[in-house]
Image (cartoon, helix red, strand yellow):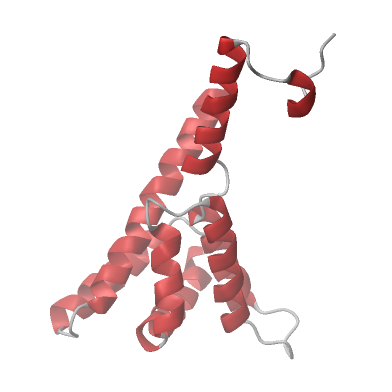
Length: 157
């Protein structure tokens, strides 16, 4: 059951990441009636994955405007949704985006909280290529009998 839950979580994360990537691609296109409608449609799809879709819709419209105006935030979000984004990169991107969107004079910011929620949903913080590679190396060392269990923190009882 745990594996099913984890797979479902990754599936939902992947779908939302693709939706955000599509939104970023639409934002880069020249503004036309068709692109504005496509952006609105994409915002609606994304808000279905966030708590309180009514408020989320308003906040996502505002965030879309921020993405159109601020290339630095847009680039950070592009890195975050790219398939090659590592856990470490994701952490940095989320920190940079929230720092740019935050207002120190406003301790509780519902807009920022909603965007943080979105970023947490799309950030690859569970498993990335680097961690899988390290795991495979450890398994191979164990199979070959070359692993030093004490160095790896494995009890030898």
